[in-house]
Amino acid sequence: MGPKAKKTGNKKKKINKAERLKQIQEEEEKRLKDEEEARLKYEKEELERLEMERIEREKWCQLEEKDLQRRNEELEELYLLEGCFPEAEKLKRETRLLAQQASTLADLDTGNMEKIIRDENITLYLWANLKKNPRYKSIRFSETQVGFEIPRILAASDIALRVLHTHYDHVSPLRHIPKPTEEEPTTLETEILKEELEDVETAISTEDQKESKPEESGSKLIHEEEIKVEQQSNIEVQMNFADEESEAVKGELEMKLFSETVSAAHLLQIENAPEMPLAFEDNEVDICQFTTLGGIYHLDILELPPQCKPAKGWMIVEILKEGLQKYTYPPETTEDLEAENAFPPVEVTLRVHDNVMFFEDPMVVRWNAEDQHWTTDGISNISYEQKERLITFSLETFGPVTLIQDTHINMPYRSWELRPLDVNQVLLTVTTVFTEIQIHIKENVCMLSSIKLQDIKEDFPILEGKWMTSFCFINALKEAGLNIFPTGHSHFYVSANNKIPLVEVKAYRQMALLSSAFAFGWSKWNLECTSSKVVFKVKEHLAEEWPENPNWDLLLFTGDRAQMLKINEESEAFSEALKEETEFHSTLYHMVKDFASKEAMEKIRSSDCQSLACVCQMLLSTRLLSYS
Image (cartoon, rainbow, N blue to C red; front, side, top):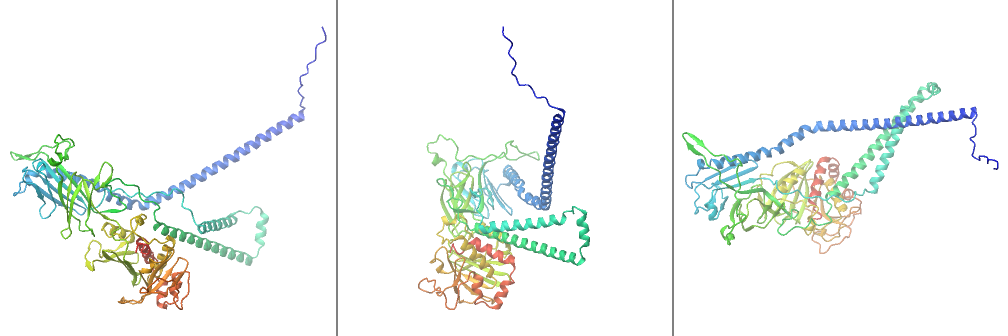
């Protein structure tokens, strides 16, 4: 055998003591470094966590403080809203008690029971059929014309008829407002203002940090002590001036940004919806086209409960566990082949509420509980007596019914006029096909001054003489049937003279600013110009009395340019020719300034801001330049 082969494996290099110590030292340094990094990371995370907790605590405290400030107001409002629950139970109880005691309350002439209960917000009519006389089919509640013409089958049945009239609409669904699919783009000017405001805030915070930063070394302290008193005072003055200047710039930028936000809100208020509302089924009422007026009439046929019976000085009555039950009419199933003749519709006569105004015969609709919408089917033979305010119709199925009117019946307007009355007071007159509405605006509230139908002044005590904020006033007019306030969908239902929204908003804002000393009015030439231009009449007015034949000037405005027109209302054709001895201006204010008196300009400058905002809100809500 040959010699054994030598192993060729790598031998580990021996580490001397110095290298070993160096390695241990490096490992120790790395460990310390890792520990330091971990400690710094932990401290950073802990500081961030504490800062987040502090911010959350501050937010929480602010929310709690805000909640406490408005808690009483919210609880009072909730209390008023929750009043509907006991009110509903009270009505149920009163109906049940009246129905059970019907025999003791029977009328001596007819032998049946009838009762009317009135409240501020509701009226309850109840009739109980005690005699069950098939010939007694005409029912009229005493001192009213409200009632029914019931078929023979109901006249011979144990039933009670109930009309619960709530003077408000709590049935109609709220209108769906689609959310924008994308975030609203901000204007370039708004973005620039935001960036400038952020830069100013950063600069101010940097200055504060520099002032609060402690001195790093004692040499700086010694150096500061050597500075002269005069130099210190000069530096302090300069720093205070710089701070004041920074705060002033910041405040100015914030005001500009807020002004941009208000302008954007005004623009959004008159923006037209791009699409029609959702498609409606047959006979379904379009709630964007029609408005419910006068509240809801809940019509019910009830099964007459067991009556009270006297026995040895006691009144005995059987109380049904399930309470009052509705009587199904017509029956859901019937073997009668001539069911339509056997169960004919019931004729109903209702009185229209005094606090609403119909300019045409009202339409009657009923609530479809299954599909949750108002519908016109199942209602026929509608007739309306305007003087007596009585409406009669035939109803196939009982349930909630209401009266509706075209939302845009007073649109487009025939003319309009805005003129000053007194200090911070103006009168807005809107003339429609049916009526002339005068709105008195005083400081930050509005009032219905008068309403005329066919040149005859009508009394409307529910609104006349009552001052309200602009939003409450607008809602009150809508609920009364005096709707002169277009919505985003109105241009689909009205032949409108739509103007570019930005031009319209600028015109309304600047008209409001001048409204304390200048009158404005409708011009027929507004229809002749393009959508990027508006034309209206203007006149300085400082006197207490309004002249019979005012001398108007015509003004054309594009949003960026204002000019006086050479033509007048009696001219044969429209022309944009400039009036002699007048010039172009960028705003309405500077346009009227050319011919305005000193008194007028002084009155404009001293106007109350709340009054001007209220006038602007009313102009934006009526959209006179697009809907007349």
